Every structure is written in structure tokens, then in C-alpha cells.
Image (tube, rainbow, N blue to C red; front, side):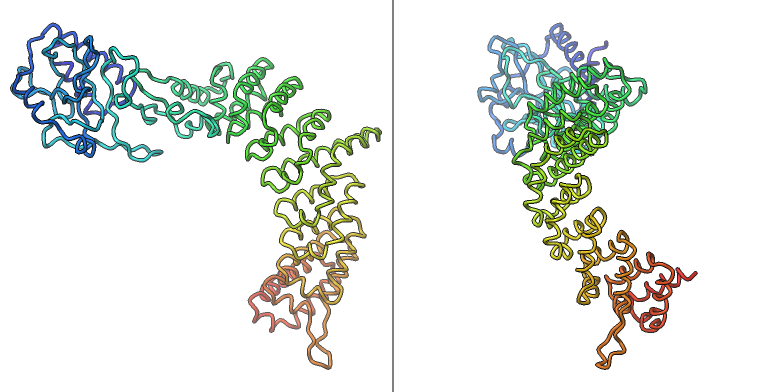
Length: 584
């Protein structure tokens, strides 16, 4: 090429702010070419005046650090291995206008000549506090680059030379390769779990002494490949399967799809990859689905090997983790009877801890549901001994629930477990739980969480249990008060929806009670008072919807007789609208 072309190429890349890996490597080749030219044309020397100026005008360290200028650091390829600036002397300034070759534009200071002492010189550019080479007054400050997922960072100068001599350079002379150079797609940065011990540099890639971490390049290529190729398999991404599974939702779904529809050999490859990174997968937002897929679609042998690996982890920690609890739930649902019984033995003496945890309570609910299903299935198949044995395996869970039923029923998460016990347990265990609930049901009716337990009793309990609750709602004219209660009103509506026909009738009769004709003049019509209440009007509307024809006519007559009074109430209007709609 013509003389000076190398500088022109470097300046072009510099002005265009080309920071890709390919641009970096091309610039390296150009610099190498320039070095060869300089060796052949070694006619430029530093004048003594320039050297004296550099020694006579050092820049103060504090000011240099505050300015944070980008200046050329000169590396010497001599026997000493380091430039004198390392020992406290200022670095060599760029070309002056008096030299033979004119300097390039300010964005790219000139390539320096050989040192007069015979050192071979290579210049690279980077930000560093301390000495600042003389620069034109018009030189702009370091440019700021914006990336959508990051704050503004100072532009990192590219390293154009090679490091001679020392095997470990100073920290200040290492160039960090920022994540936006890797062209990593959105959400691909989730390739390493937050629980991983890798730091951000290992996760996003780095450039240190011209050594580029290609792990993320492979990940990006794999993500693009599986997104664009519908026939892709796990064999195509062998080596980075866990990283792909933890990258984003689309990649996670691809892994699950291949585990479901792939061959046994492909499924075995997925298992091998999962076992190699199980400590990262189970706690990852997307990676946990790979383990769930192996439990759901894997063979019995695959499930067994995976469970052996999980037993090697902290099972309790998994159950209390946001994503780990889902893996345990899937295992309980997909494993056989023997394996599930072995797994739940890990929960001995930890039931109450699990129940009070926002994640662990789901594991206990799943245990109750699956173990009860196993027991009922064995009983239906004519094997009472097996049914009894399976039922006894979960007895420790029921014992803890019965012993703490009032506390658990009024707990945000505990009420869910109590409901599952009522819903799924076989009759003997369910009766034990219900009997304890009936001993404190009056408190639960008006409780924020306990009312849901009472509603479940109305759905799954016996008629005696329903009658006991109905008596609490209707005796001593308590229906008017409870229907206006924020939580107890839900129980009244549950009786109207799930109760027996004679239970509904008793509720409706209590609502139609009218004492306005009393001589004392303090009477009231229950349904009219309820219709004007901001909470109880929902009970009245539900009663209108579920009542039979003859009861509806009575309701319509009582409410229509007080239409003028109800029309003045902001809530009574809704009851009138419901009646008008039913009449049509």
C-alpha cells in the first residue's frame, strides 16, 4: 500500500468508533504492517527539544486523575521490558508538526518513532490517571456511549499492540471488554444464574491482552441457531446446553420441547448436561424448567438418576426457594409411589417451617394431594393394606396440621394447606381435621383467612358440619350482623351456593324477617337493611340468583314495596337493577 495508508485505516476505524472483535483484529494486522514499515524507514528521530519539553513539563498526578484523559502509553520491546514512564518519567509525546510525516487527526494521535536508545516501540491507547501528554486545546473529551441495558460508560480504547516481556501486566494497563461489544441479545445475559460464582466479567466476556473469552460468542450463536432452525436438536448445542436453558424463555421452551419429542439418546444428553450444572439450574428463573422437563418426560431411569443428584443438594433449601420448590413439586407429581415416599421423609420435623413459607407451603400441598391420590387409588384397586401403608406415610403432616389447626387456618399460607387436607385426605384423616376446625369455627368465620377454610368445609364437609356452621350464621339474629361483615359475608354466600336446599331455605327465611310492625316502632326488614349496606348487598343479589321461583316472588314483593327507599341508597340501586333484570 502507499506510505501512510496504515495510519489512514486506523483513523477511519477510530473515527467510526468500530469496537467489534473483527475491527480489533484488523487493526492489529494494520499495526503489524506499520511496524514493518517503520523498521524499513527509520529516518525519524525525536528532537532533543521535544524530549526536554517532556521532562520539563510533567503533569501533576492529581490533575491527571481528575481529568481522566485518554493518552498514549508506550510499551518498549527491549531487554528491560518497560518504558521509563513506569519508573516515574513522563511518556513520549506525539509527533510535532515539524516532523517529516504530518500527524493524523486529533482523534488518533500519531504513531511514535523508534526510541533513540534503540527500543522497539508499540503504542496502544487507554484511560489512565497520572501523566497526560500534550494535546491540542480543541481535543474533545472522551465520548460517552449508551447501551439500553447499561448506564453511560466511558468509551474503552482498543488495545492495538502486544504485550512484551512480563507475563502479568499491571492492572492499570488491562483493557476491559465491555458487554456491549459482544452484541449479546436481550435477555441472553441470564446465561449464568445469580447463584453462580462467576463475576460479571466472566459472564459478559472480557478482552485482556488480546485474549477474548469466546464463551458468550458461542452462546449467542447457539441462541440464534435454535431460534432460526426448527429442526435443531440438543446435539447441535452440545457443550453449552445448561447455558442455553438459562438464557431466556424461548431457549428454555426449546430445551423442554427436545426433552419431550427427542430420542432417548438426546434425552440422555440433556440429563448429562443437567447433572453437570444442577446447582445452577434448579435456582434459575428459566433453568429450573429443564429439570422439570426431565421429570415430566424422562424415563424411570432418568428420573432416578436425577433424584440421586437432587438428594446430593440441600433438599430443604430447594423446597424454600422460589424456583427450587417447583422442581420438587414436579418430582412429587411425576415420581412413583416408592420414590415419593422416600422424598417426603426428607420433610420430617420441617412441616410447620414449610407451611409458613411462601414457597414451602406449595410442597406440602402437593404432598397431601399426591399421597392421598395414591392411597385412594390403592383402595379402589382392592388393596386396603397398601392404601393404609401409603396413608400412614403422610401421617406426620396431618398430625402437625391437627395440632395447630386454628393457628394455621388464620395464617396466610397455612389456610391453603388446611384446605388441601379437607379437600384431598381420605375420610378418617379428613374427619380429624374437620373436628378440630369445628371447635373454633366461630372465630374462623370472621377471620381474614379463616373464612376460606370454613367455605371449604361447606363444600367438602358432611351435612352435620354444614348444619353447625348454618346455626352459627342464623341464631340470635346474627345473620344481619355477619352479612355486613367483610369476611363473614363470604361464608353466607358460600352457604347459598354450596349448601343443601333446606340450608338455603333457612338462610332466605332469616333474610326475609320483618319486624317493622312491632308496637315499639324499632322493627326492621332484614333484606331491606342488607340491600342498603355496601357489603351485604352482594349477599342479597346472590340470594336472588340462587333462590327458587316461589322464594323469588317473595323477595321481589318485599323489595318492590320499598323501591322508593332503596332508590335513594347508592347500594340499594344495584339490588333493584338485579330484580329488574330477573323480571325481564
